[in-house]
Amino acid sequence: MLFDLTDKKIWVAGETGMVGRAVLRALETENTHIISAPHSDLDLTNQQQTYDWIKHNKPDAIIMAAAKVGGIGANMAKPAAFLHENLSMAQNVIHGAFQAGVAKILYLGSSCIYPKMAAQPIKEEALLTGTLEPSNEGYALAKIAGLKLCQFYRSQHGCDYISAMPTNLYGMYDNFNAEKSHVIPAMILKFHQAKLNNDKEVMLWGTGNPLREFLYVDDLSHALIHLLKNYSDSTPINIGSGHEVSILDLAHLIQNIVGFEGIIKFDASKPDGTPRKLLDNSKIKSLGWSAETQLSQGLQKTYDWFLNDRLLSCQ
Ligand SMILES: NC(=O)c1ccc[n+]([C@@H]2O[C@H](COP(=O)([O-])OP(=O)(O)OC[C@H]3O[C@@H](n4cnc5c(N)ncnc54)[C@H](OP(=O)(O)O)[C@@H]3O)[C@@H](O)[C@H]2O)c1
Image: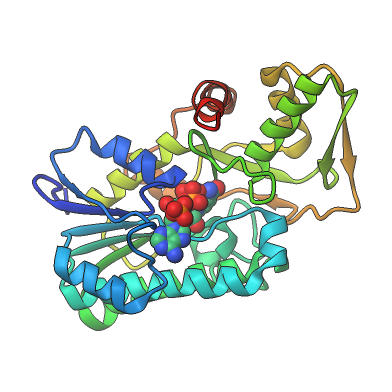
């Protein structure tokens, strides 16, 4: 083990988000001290507040899971906000951590950092070898800057800052807001509402043809703890399930889980995004981690959570 978590002070930035909550669940079995700063108390786009908070609380390690996150529609509508806010958060947390002498950072990027037409499955080496998918370019550029900050603080100052690039995630506490959600919560919500309304059809964006990889968020959190302990290198590391599914097949899976009996239609005038996106996960597998949750199991758990917890909390 390269970094022993025992008795370490850990800050999970973005603790109220889907990933942050999953990381906190995974840390429950580790002997650590968790320190907390939710968005309501600390705006990470505020440079001075962020520097001061890190200096005052001085974590031993930071898992940087705070970000402005959204689906294609939100990214296309507000590219400036996605670039500006994510860039600010990355700079403020990483430089603030450097100033305070924080020993380890695990920065979360995303698979959208890779070129739109990268060879599949996408290896870590594909970074900056081609043009990005335009629909989320602002977000991707901010994530690339964040991972470069980790690399450069390592090369210039010897900091043990690492970055991980997860594939598309889903699970408990995903964002079910119709305007901002990713494909899985958006579909769950649509099928659920269509079932309640006895609708005859559900209309989905795009052609249904793109291939996507999905990872259940509790698999991700175990990967992150594994990397925190065992990975120390400048190369960002992919985290993926290794399995891909077409949007059409995903829709059928979710339709069955929700129990919607109408038909599915696709609006091909809406963008598909990248045609295929599968991460090469051989590097993290060689470190002894692989995903455990099958897509159908993870979708069922997510829908159960949506029905039992999420809907109750909104009443
Ligand atoms: N979701 C995915 O499919 C996916 C895939 C690959 C990578 N990732 C990466 O994983 C990380 C976490 O994503 P997620 O899905 O957990 O997102 P999320 O559920 O939207 O959570 C984001 C977290 O960041 C916080 N946050 C946002 N703006 C902030 C600010 N200005 N100051 C302080 N905190 C702020 C949010 O707090 P509030 O809610 O209170 O604003 C929330 O706790 C991100 O870096 C994302 O890029 C996600």
